[in-house]
Length: 557
View (spheres, rainbow, N blue to C red):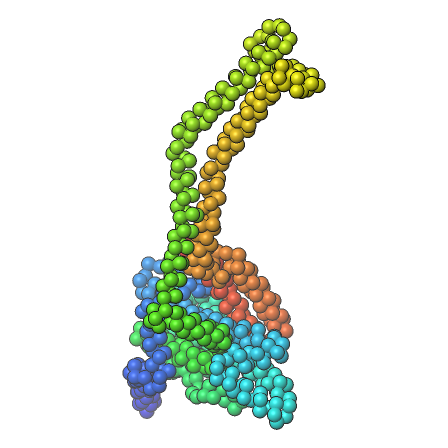
């Protein structure tokens, strides 16, 4: 009887195991089949976006996992370890990307919440699109007519509008950060076992991650239940978040097969896809307005101005029988050609002529120096003859012109006592002619020096004439460089990028301090949430440093 009962128990266990496996595989096949048929537009769009990311996008570098380096000769061990690494990296990548999207929207709404009441009212009326502008103005006029406190009510509505989005996005961020911290701590706990014996530790890790997904589903479901009643956004909670769960598998008696591991990994990816779809639909209702929506008034004014300019140009064009546009075009063409000729072509030709005709100009300069020398020699002979005749003695040929000129001036002063008599019969006329010769020599010497200065600066004048074109070209090149480079993000190489990286470091330090405070106070949930935010900030810093290193070529990752 005992043997018969034992055999019956074994048969029941085998039948239960078979039923479990059949339900496991049938559930998997059903999910795989239904996933390819879009039951809703969000499911279809999620599939298309996921397929696009897998086929065309390169995996984004993320914060390294806390796993030790491994080296094994077994290809099976390396395959299992690589599979575990891929699953964990994909989970981390999805969490980091979702946290990044939520963080950007949350920072926008927090900045709006810190503004004054007038700034909030301006945002509600003028920065939410044309429809919100019309509705806001209509409500404002209605409240002014009925109650008279329209501005105060609009301020309250703006504060409620902004605070609702901050609450929802903060709660979502905390839920994702908690999930990220739980996965990270679990990987750190079983890291060595996962590297050494992945075939044994990977199933338990998948089961633990499945439990984390269940906790995330409960956390986001709580948000769904609370905000479905209180939310002012229509259709923002149309469907709840429901993850796929692993069937019950007896891990203690036998290890998982390769097929079971693949099915479990696929369930993880399905849960990530569902999370992305839910967050993309939910965050879209609470995300910040687009740049076009924020600046719609400027774009509208620009479009109106462009339309007016187009009508004005059409009025002066040949289509309306007016030659004004053609005349303006020809004038602009002539002005451009004149500017190019005066400030580009002619200065460059002058520089070329100055460089390649230096020897010819130097030869011409030597002839001018000889002419000045002839005038100087003539003056010397005139001074020598006058001095010898006046003094009655012989002067040497190398006598100083200055001394002989003193003799001439002394005689000139004596002759001026009787100017009319000495002009006719004295030496006054001769002394005057000598002074005219001296003045001629001084003028020629001055002109020669001035000409030498001008010739020495011809290149400078040509470069000065080309400076407007040079500055214009430099300004255009700087604009093109700034347009294409756009290194304002933390991955760039400019001053703004360095400032962004410093801000990320400060953010990491602050969040680590908050994490330590929560740990000391025994607040486990808050500590896990803050740990996830620390990991997110570290991932941003890692991505910024790696992008900067690749841009500058200082570090090859």
